[in-house]
Amino acid sequence: MNKNEAQERADRIRAFREELAQAETEKILVLTPDQGAQLTSYHNRLLDKLAGDFDVDTSGEQKQLSMGMRIISFLGAAAISAAVFFFFYRFWGVISTPMQVALLVAAPVLATLGIEFAKRRERTLYFAAIVGLVAFACFVLNLSMLGQIFNITPSQNAFLVWSAFAFILAYTYGIRILQVAGILSLLGWLAATVGTWKGCYWLSFGERPENFIIAGLAIFGLSFIKHKKHEDFPRYYRVFGLLVVFIAVLILANWGRISYLPFNIKAIEYSYQVIGFAASGLTIWIGIRNHWPGTVNLGSTFFTIFLYTKFYDWWWTWMPKYLFFLVLGLVAVLLLFILKRLRATSREVAP
Amino acid sequence: MKQRGLLTALGLLLLVNVVVLGGVSYNRSGEDAVMTLTERELPVASGYAYQENSGLSLRINTYHSFYWTGKAGNYDEFGWLDSKKLESLGFSFDPRVTSGEKNDYYDRQLPRQTFAVVEFDDAAWTAWKKILEDELASLGQEGQDGKKTDKERESARHGIERELKAGSRLFIVDAGKDPALLRQQHTDRSRYLILPATARVSSWGGYAYPEAKSSIRGHISLLIDEINVPRHLHTLFDGRQPQKGFNKYPPITSEGGPRYEVSLRSGKRYEPWIENIERRQVQ
Image 1: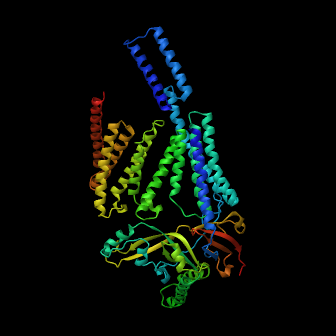
Image 2: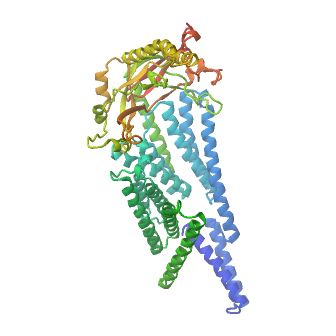
Image 3: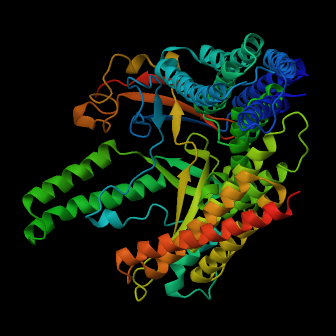
């Protein structure tokens, strides 16, 4: 059993207890005092074991606190990473080159060892996640500053090694924030590399959103790799991969001039508008079919954005503003009806 | 498993650093160019030596189009970058593209990685100096013709004199994909520096003014345009407030002239570094 499975079990016990209490109140099912005591004792023992082995949340309050702690650990990690950057910039001018190199190499090594240290002292990994993101930031600082100190020609391969480093740590310790760091670095490398296929200089990769469509699809593809140990990781590949694809399509649907396609700009924009609608519809369908709520939400959000963008193009200038917003509101209501219908259909289909 | 992951991450960290530092060592194991430049060519880069950033870098100054109201404003420092040269760098030219389509066709072509030849104090500087001296000479005539007020002429004269006496003598004069071939064409290693760069092509006139004659223009930007100054060479710059000292335009002769001389080298990977910085005698 892994931590996710343990958390699911604890959630089921909590839900079962609430439902049983309700059934007892309504006199549907009343356990004898012995049965009640036996069941409570069994569940308590089980929850203690799960909490002891996996540090799971055993109550609603604990769950809410855990979410708060995750946000705080991310903010803390971002702040400490910024502190490391600014600290180095503030003092690097007063130390010799060998010392600069020694510090730049030592910082990520020590921070990486720090993850193991934090992990051994706290199983929830909040502190390990902070140290992990700091280790990643130190490695980014390491390579970028070596480039600056020795006047090295920039290379996109830095993104590849940063992503490899983040993924190794993410999979070793099960730290999601490092998985996200790895995904973003890999996206940068893939988009830059795709950009160089047409012979352009890699740092211009941001000028052609199509580079990100290919990179995003590649990241989305990673979600199909079986993750026995880290079951929640594919969700992040899916969401980040598709998010990048949709943003790129949205940009091209409104700004065809920056496309690779050698066609008329309006034709490019119309094509990407059609692609945007089709892709968001397909995403909703795939999400419903595979029970991926995050994917469904992403598809719905972008379908609405594509629709609203089109409405803006068509009606903003000639329609009175009150009417324009009324139409948007009515369309939202219509979309709600459609989604509600879909929801009801999936309930009928589900066993 | 955890131990193995940790060791792999540490191994990757160390391996990448070894590769990067090995590359630096390889670059510096040979010299492609050795040059002695001054503050005119290598002024202190902005954003350095401030409270939040104690580092110090020198900027490779190849910028010359300073005076936009005069004839020198029309000077195209990349005039040599014609369509044949741009094609050799990987850009496409289509004779069927009409004047109105030029802007889209050329501006949509992305930058290409290339190598630039940076010339120091030679033919390009002589030609630029001649343009400036001619302009200086014509200022008197423009005053007599009433084309410029005394104040405008004084301002122009000041700008031209400053460029002549304190402006950079570095010019990008050639570019190509093969640095070894460029070195064969520009053999003087104390006068020609080869640096990694990017080339871009653009069109002006055609898009906004379809009836006007379109022109295609190339542009080269250095990829390494700032060079780090190692700590042991900071002495000259220590104790000075950047905004009052070295971040300003280099002083002209009457103000003492350039304050330092830099021994610049570039290596096997065409990456430059500063070997030494010496204070110049005030003239």
